[in-house]
Amino acid sequence: MTWHVWQVSPFITSIFFILGVFTLYQVLYDWFKSISHYKNLKITDDQLKDVFGILYMLIFIFSMQATIVGKSISWEFMNFQIMAIIFCAYFLNIHIPYRYFIPIVLVYMIFNSSIGYWESWCHAWTLIMCYESFNHIRRMQEENHRFIRYMMVGIVYGGLMWFFVMVKFNLTLSTFYEEWFYLVIFEILLYSYVNMILRDSKLKIHLLEFANHDALTKAENYAAYMTEIQYEFESCQRNKLHLSMMMFDIDHFKHVNDTYGHLAGDKVLQHVADVAQTVINANDPKVKFYRTGGEEFNVVFPGYDLESTKDIVNEIFVALNHLPIDINGKKIYISISMGVSTVSSKDVQPNDLYSRVDDNLYHSKNNGRMQITAF
Image 1 (cartoon, rainbow, N blue to C red):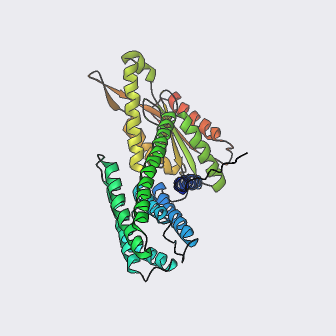
Image 2 (image 1 turned 90 degrees about the vertical axis):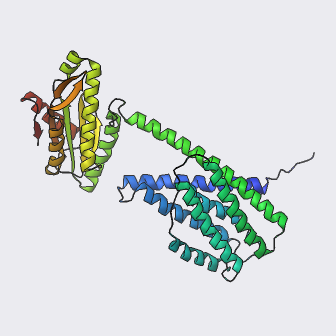
């Protein structure tokens, strides 16, 4: 019996290795982002992406170089390092000022004992220019020929960097062209792979927005409210924070539907949601706005006690009461009723707060409407 041993091509291995490194980055970044959101850390997703992206790629580059530093083959991982640079500069769109490159480059050149070679200095300068060029074309608004620009920058600067490596290590022309060709293939694969991930991510975001937003008013819906209030209530209990809620609905909304039709009612709901969201955005974007029922809306105030809600509550109340809405050339005026409350020490679940706010709303409606009940 004859046994055939199949050997995996080093080139194929390199492809899987590179894609694996960037897949691991995405997994770890998503994990850290989830922790950041859960812990309410004062860091934006973009800031986290920049810091984590740079640290991850520096660890990746230095770790790889550590395995071959000082050896005659210390050039073999250069394509991986160039791909890491492209990933940070183009796909993560991390902007690094020139002054930050200098210490990083010096440390790296000392680390791999190349600081005394003129070729290494030329290589380092070319790498910095490569990063800046990728960063520049990534920030360009024009969508046409994006892939061509991406490939041209990579081919030109990649060729220059490999030229300096060829001179420094006395590589043959065939090795130079082979490695340059591999770099071009890696660039194409990375572009395709990352864009595939981004398309999948955008689809998931779109589906999530569709699931969590009301199609008519574009406000977040009851499902989104349930998720958010559970999180905020637990955070409030665990960290001893304030949490308040306001609920309002449109007075005599059924009369609007019966008199002017449901399309008119839809227009009223859209206009009310737009005005309320505008007021909230102008005051505090951390305050959350939801359509939780037919003509019923909820506003959640993380970190607010009852007194702190007054300014936003009153501003929404004033903005919506006697709000003129044009219905087929005729102006109609609406009014709203409100209920407001805050978490108390007796509340054991989010519905305890919700019920109290709901009771306050109906107190307003049963006692003349167009008023605020808060306690």
